Every structure is written in structure tokens, then in C-alpha cells.
Image (cartoon, rainbow, N blue to C red; front, side):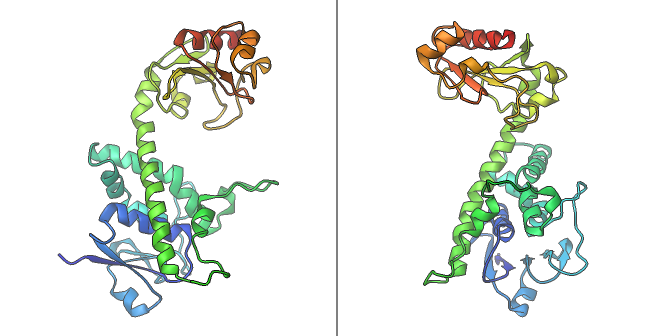
Length: 307
């Protein structure tokens, strides 16, 4: 069976076309299911089976996925526009997730993972590429390098003697493929853990997990979420942790940080501050502390709640 030919533009590249190619790589297999051509030749583009980020046409039925043309207006329900990455993810994301997860989950579960990956990864890159400023973080004195900027850094610079954009593109795609696969796996972990987190026992403002699960999103779906202040759980590398619950997922804005007198302390100094022997550390921000035992971690959480 002849391989499909996928075409995108030559020259400099951005995160959207790199991640679009990575999506095809996961879903179809670069070099096995399809070959990739980077060109501006309209005849080559017209004869390709799949075209993305070039060509001036969006028509999913004919596998044309450009977003630069006049009149293009594809947006999600939340208003985030689709770049070539988002268009390819919408078309091939389920196949990509199925490949990464080795077909171990149902089609319905795979579609759910695809949707979560779109929220966690795809939409941010689409918004950046489309210049959708309303959906992007704003200003400040510190610039956090985005994934889009990191991928853009693979482009040869003006001082580089060798300006091989095609080779640089393939290197960037390999990195993007791994990032995308990792995101698929982590999003599946979050979805698979949700039921465990919802069923876990809560008492006195503490949620106790007997196994580590990614809980930061599922916790907010609990009916008692507003009353929870700390989550106690076993650390993957040993011991137990007490983590302050954030006001919103993945934020350092906490309902009740660990006591100020504990922060930044370790070992005996921490024990003296808490009155509980055996403590390992307390983070300087007050968002997490550790103890070797479950009982010790519970005691730290209870003491922090009463403080």
C-alpha cells in the first residue's frame, strides 16, 4: 500500500506546524504511514494527500488544514481559534491517543483523553499562533518561556552557518512528539484517577489518599471541595506528604497555607516548630510538607488545620 504524502510549508516553522506533524506521526507513523514534504511548490501541495499550515484551504473532507486564508473563522465554542495543530488534532487526535495508550482503553475513554489534551496543550499553542491575545497570559516583568517559543528555538538563527530548516524541523517534531505523548499519558492518568479521588475519605478538612493519584483537578469536583484545606497522600519516592489545597487547580493561591512558623524548616528545626517528631521538610511557600509516616503526616495536617 502506497504511503500517504503530507505537505506543509518549507522554511521557518512554528509550534503549530511542528505539533501538527507530531500528531500525524503518532496517528499514522512518519516514514511508515506517510511521508512528509516541506515545500511552497503549489503543484506538490495540490497533489499531496494531506496538507497543513499551507495551501490556503480548510476542508477537512479533502484533508486540507490551512488557517491563514481570508475568511477563515474556525473557532471552538469557547472562542479559541484553530491553528493547523488544532485542526489536525481534531481530525487525528483520537487515533494519536489510541496509539500512545496502545489501545488499552475504550473508544469513548480515548475521545475523552483527546478532549482533555486539547484543553491542556493544543488550545494554548493555537491561541499563541493565531495571536488570540484574550486567551494568553498577560505581561509583567518576568517572561515565562512558552512551549511555542521553545519549539521556535529549533529554527536556525541568522548567525548559523548551516541554514537547514528541514533538518531542524524534523528535530523539533521528535521533541514535540514526545511532549504530545507525555501529555496524552498524563491526561489519561488524571481521568483514570478521578473516581478514586471522588471516593476518597475526607475528615476535618483533610482528604486522605491511600495511593498517590493526580488529584488537583478531580478534587474540585467533590461536593465538599470548598471545605478541604489539605490533602494527605503517599509520596511516589517514599514517605508521606501534606499539600495545601489551592483556590483553583495548579495554583499557588491556597485556602490555608501551612503555618508560617513551619516554612523553610527541615528535620529537628521543623519538629521543634510543629511539636511532631520525624518531620522531613516544609516548603518555604507553605504549600507542602513531608513526614516519613502516614500517622505523622496526618498529625501535621491536623495541627495545621487547628493553627
